[in-house]
Amino acid sequence: MKKKLFSVFFVVLALQLMISDTYAYAEPDLLLNKYNHARYMQTMMQKKINWVVKLLGQKGEKAFAELNKYNKISAIDISVYDPLARKMVVAPDYVAVVKGNLKVKDVNPDFYAKKIIKMEIDRLTSSNLDKLISLVKPFDFKNHMGKVALTPSGKVYVVATGLESIALVKAFIVDIVKSACKLMKEEGINKAFKEFNQMGSKYRNKNTYVYVLTDKGKCLVDPNYPEIVDKNTYNYAGSDNTYPAQKFIKAVSKAPYSSWIYTKSLKPTEETDATSRIDLDKSGKNLKEKLSFLKKITTKGQTYIVGSGVYLEDIKPL
Figure 1 (cartoon, rainbow, N blue to C red):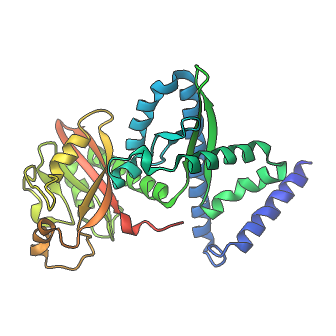
Figure 2 (cartoon, one colour; figure 1 turned 180 degrees about the horizontal axis):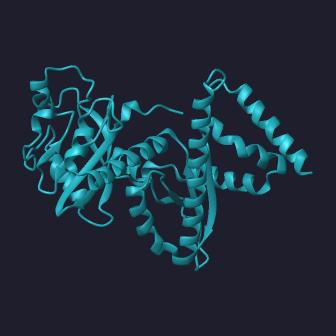
Figure 3 (tube, helix red, strand yellow; figure 1 turned 135 degrees about the vertical axis):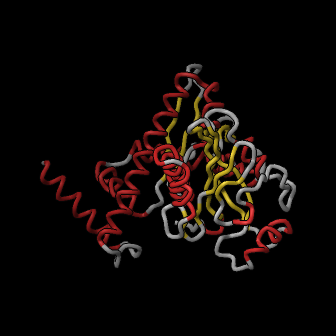
């Protein structure tokens, strides 16, 4: 029986690869890396879904605040829907950030609730063959998960998350920032800053880069705006009077001392005279929308805010 099951598994796997346009001509190492990454993200999603269901089962509506806080620092966003009230009660933070203050009216409760509930019903009623095929589903990179949660008072909620390009990108940015913080603590800031400024390093490649400022607003590293390095940017208003440095400092001022924020900036690949970049920023010309992750750390008695981000126009559909 086990041999037969394994045979079916590998046949399904082979068919999935053969019919996939994305991977038909992929290098073996690239294919394996993408598969492993997708499998990792799927496992993480499953763990998060189960955690949320358990949390709602223990705390009920009191868990909402904790889940909203989690969405601010997570690479995998959680949504919680109230199917009876027909509204979303916990929203992915990046949606709220990009759209501004997310209102319930901005979301179609019927569409989301029905879709997630149907997914849960399909999952519970699927055949063994369907469940086997779902083992290789990460190859299409469009995997979603949903479950029904029951609170102590008997209230029903639908918990959901999905593997989209934004989740993969956010996981990548979180990893870069955490790695940068670790490097600063273990190797010292001089060695770390040199690495952050090194073109082609993990911390500076194309439109991705790490920037560092103090908790008072002094810029220490910023490959994108070299003219502000070693200057205090606390009172720099920016093109729309949002005071970026103050925004950064406030975002990480409370536990867990990390957060996603919405900003605008020039792209590093934007070809301009280096001396005019800050002037362009002030004028608002060519600024691109950006989602950034920030983390505050203290090492050797000094406090730093470390960040990196992704330009929204660079996030491609999966």
